[in-house]
Length: 162
Image (cartoon, rainbow, N blue to C red; front, side, top):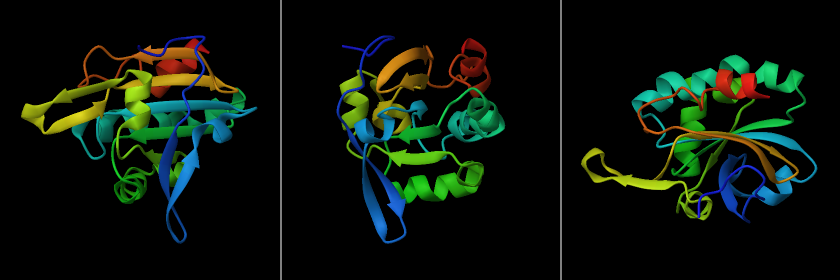
């Protein structure tokens, strides 16, 4: 079943790099009593993700904060080491965007947002989407039809819908 507006996020533990190495991040704790934007990409360093999707949230991060968003989180089916490097390479980390890995695609699959594209080497990856979550409940959900496009899931599109 695919998650949609009005649904509560499933329990999930994601991973991020901390000062002493990988750290577990419990998403329900991170979203409790907070307004959070979560956007997901098929893969770190892949063309559209790297040149369009992450930059759209770097550009709009401050505008989300002005609308009461406590945190902007990027999720990808990658390990936390890759997510740390990617956040540094794109400027996302410097912009204050939280880069979380979903290394086993458990969160992605629980949302019903997984897909595979073997010819591109993408197995059990996340569809491209962006959502606004308030206290663990999805308030807005924008999903791209194709993993190679970044239109409805871009930072500007989600911001305009708020």
